[in-house]
Image (cartoon, rainbow, N blue to C red; front, side, top):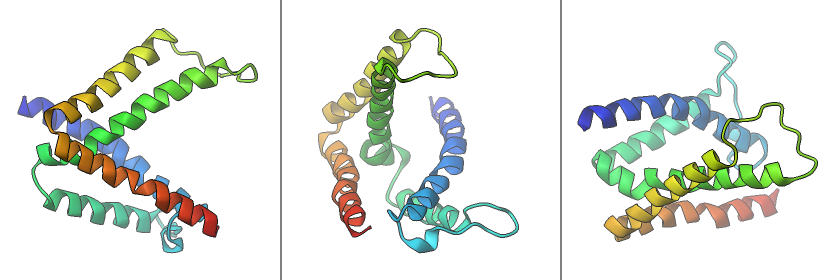
Length: 154
């Protein structure tokens, strides 16, 4: 089981390392994050400050406890958004003006199964570790007022 968790973590890590800093960089460009993050390294053409920010945040999370504790407080909340993303895809495809350039096999069954699986993970976390799950969701929910505060300032 440990080997499976390790392989899964390494697989997810590539996506997180590649997309996370670019998200922070884009947020800074849109005025939703501090301006100093909006920086591209002149030689490597990467969002280097955003990468450093993610590295620092990862170090803080890693210092707070074991993998299971991180999962029960933080990581599972991503599955909430993955499920909402699948639901958003279903809603988007219902729009009459939407013309995708690629059609996925099994639509809408595959996104519905994925969405239900993702929400099952979230519900399971609340059943098995309610306090830690609520703490993690509360941490994510803190982003909502911060977003609206920064958006109003912009």
